[in-house]
Amino acid sequence: MVRIRLNWRRFPEGEQVQFNDPIEALQALKDHRLDLVTYELNDLAGSAASPESPIVMHLMNARDDAALDAFRKRFGPLTDPLVEGGNSWLTMKEARERFDLYLRIAPPRPNRIGLVNDLMASVSLRPQVHFLDGAQTPQIVLMAESLYDFMLMEVATIHQVGATVTDCSHCRKLYLTGPLTGRRSHAVYCSDRCRVAAMRARNAEKG
Ligand SMILES: [Zn+2]
Image (cartoon, rainbow, N blue to C red; front, side):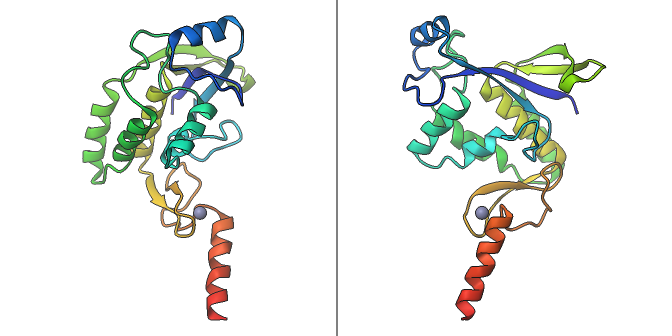
């Protein structure tokens, strides 16, 4: 699998300023008030190399305005406000609704793949060669232009490998099951914690 990367900027934790206004963002850049972060799409399991992977699932679980705001603070804006027209077309909430539809494209597989190709038509990726993880041999990496594009590539990968979005039977959190996700296809709980909590609840009911 070719790695996808995103070099992104976000305001440090606690910073109140939003990226909405390009002039504010430019000023923040000048003042070195922005954190530079790199996101990498490598697998869908949230490994040590990319613990927050896939980011799109964090967006899916941001179910109200406060959570969407927290998502924006944690991961940065959807698009680069310094690129012309880069931030004016979609709110976080609208993006969440779109990705929710994209993620729920159902099998059969050829249908899924056809729709995924339509989604990817708008994605910008720029190839670069990098030494990854201190490796001796360089590899080609595809650099995404925006967080939005990066999340579209996550969605494409989810459909490509045949992973599925499920909601946890205990806490209702959305999570992925199947290939590259580190979970069995028929897992019903998002975590061991929820599995144990559900078992305790059942036992308590039995008395
Ligand atoms: Zn859960």
